[in-house]
Every structure is written in structure tokens, then in C-alpha cells.
Length: 196
Image 1 (cartoon, one colour):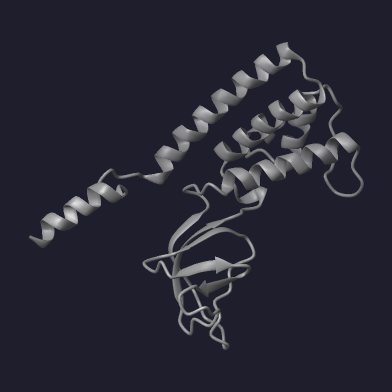
Image 2: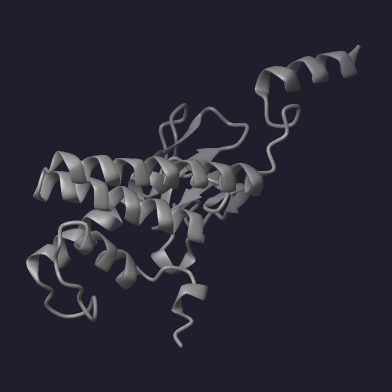
């Protein structure tokens, strides 16, 4: 008896679910030359993953992460960074692959920079709730674009809504949001009262 269902969805399984949405046969591997539909499904799955992850979630965001300055005083951005926000310094921004000081008009910072960073994670590093939403949402858009059948759209759209609700529920549990700590306006009032 197979126990594959006990493990997180693999990228191959996700692509095969997307192919099933249009009635195509599954593929056995994602390496080498792929059939056109499988290649397109994989490309769309990865694109959807990048777009979802760019929003920043509990699983791919590091707050207060230190980016070191190199020997030339420049602060490089990691290649997998989707968003980098320097903490407590509105003069620093991202330009290309480096932090840029827009007041002094230079890439030479000469100091480490603390940032909040959103990273693009490969499929294997995503939690199951993100994987599930990604392959269901990609299957829906793939089916819409390849076949465009309205009755199939209704089924896949319902699946997508359910997967999104499960994603948001899991994200809320994992993010441990706190209305006082995480709200700028509430935090401002609390700090003001503490200074009185």
C-alpha cells in the first residue's frame, strides 16, 4: 500500500494535477524534454508561486535580517529576494542587486543594513497549505486558458476558493498575528502613552 499521500505534494504531483484538469496524461518526471502541456503547466506553476510568495507570508519573510556590507562598502541583495525593506531608514532603497542610499546618491553604505526580507522559496521548502493552493489555482487558470469549459470552470473555481480559505486559515495560525504588536496605529498609541 502506498503512503505517498502522507508526504507533502511534490512538484511532479502538482504538475500532474494541473494536467489532469485538462484531461492530459501524467508525466513521470520533470527533468529533460517535457511535452508542451507539461512544460507549460510547470512554467505557470512556478510563475504563480513567485507571484504568491512576493506578497510575503509567515513562511518566507524574515524580519530584522542583517545584510552585511562587503569590502567595498556595498550591501548586496540575496538572489532569491522578492522584496527587501530596510528597517528604520527611509533613505535606503533597493536598486538592482544592492542597497542604494538615495540621499547621498551612492551604493557605498559602509555598514550592515537591517531589513525585512521576503524570499522566493523553491517548491520543496513551501508548506503544504501553500503547495495545495498553488496547484489548485494554477489548475483552474490552466484549464480556463486551455479548454475554457464553463462547467469545469465552476468545479475548479470552487476548489480554488476552498484552497484559498485553507491557505488563509493556516497562514493566520502560523503568523501568530497580534493586534497590538502588528498594528502600526495601535503601536503608535501605546508608545505615546508609555512616554507620558
